[in-house]
Image (cartoon, rainbow, N blue to C red; front, side, top):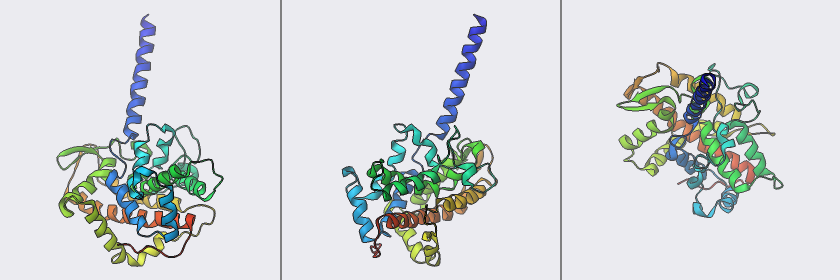
Length: 296
């Protein structure tokens, strides 16, 4: 009996450890935060062609009210119903500041293409193919969400700490973790301090940067010379490099304050802008058209 009890205890510890690891990867809040995903998709809407905007609206579920941005956190809310989709939200690396598709795009069972880059390629192909068995509405909502995810640097963070999820930090006086800082805390503080807690005001500020400060870069963001797949691997490479900078000087129980915030905020805003522009470019490539809607 003693041997059996020890075995049961080891089994219980194994189950608890597995649960802890899985919960660290589970979204305690929406990835990028609901606001971050909303902003990516709102920015994308302004860069769609008329044809693409029409096609997107036709695919949206009724509850979205014709607004793509309303659906952009759907993939997080359905993560527990579609458990197979969990690895599709990220593409962690060994910590060498580089993303390598063959090495890094797989789930914990080693199944290939099961990462955020593979998901973007997969759902782009599904939307292009009218004979695809995938539901086109779900494909659109997954694609819009995953393009946002791949632009969050810690979604291409280090494997050993689950993209910063296991690095406990103090965000000013509140306990958080490094991943959550980049998903939510930076955006929350920016909204509170600079944008009167109004997501529309923050979106407007980012759009102004696209047409002003980043105007020379915007065309480069959306350019993709690949004819067979998307350029999501390039977006992941960018995030992996930015993730390494996000880890700098951060240890367990570090306190992150103004210095960290003011370094992270410009990165967060630019990645949201890039995600929006690139999502629009992908959707325009799928649904066609040349005349863009004027972004307001």
